[in-house]
Image (cartoon, rainbow, N blue to C red; front, side, top):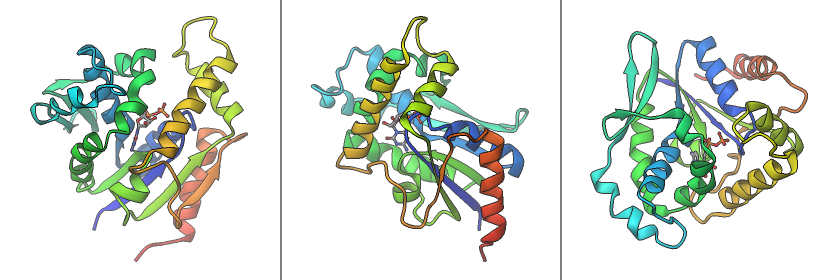
Length: 226
Ligand code: CDP
């Protein structure tokens, strides 16, 4: 039986940072399902598709597209490939992609298309998978479930510090964009963002990423699984 750690939480909660650190500490492999949705949103953006008004234009492409994580033996990590090309991480985190990704991920056909690809990753021996619906939908039987969050002000501060926004963008503007994405992610009909009833919730304000990982490891040690 493999060790599956499901980490969910809202935008800019710091879950990617802690998921990567946890993977390094446990010698496991890290899967970022947000990046998978961003890859599809990036393809839609390049084709000029409006996912809100014309989801069908995107859905019709799904059967021709491929998306998979491949193991990079040298680096010892997984790399995401879209249509057999490594994804462009900077483009996937651009404002253009961020602006439409929640609309793309709310399309039920896109989520259906994604599900098996994400579950296939979980066949690896130690997997740390991060997203919005990992503990509730993708891996409901995960060994451990963590819900990582922070107050909206703290999340806006963290995103500003990441430097993904054009110079001069205010913290209020970032908070507004994050709140809008949270609203869409939490209220969508399919697989909305929410903690599983058996999740360990960590509110990470005033904690460093290492503090959060320490807390996760302590929880796992105190709650050994058979
Ligand atoms: O890094 P950040 O918190 O900005 O978001 P992300 O993890 O890159 O995810 C981008 C978007 O993909 C989210 O806002 C969701 O709309 C969607 N997503 C999802 O619906 N389900 C997942 N398991 C992961 C991401």
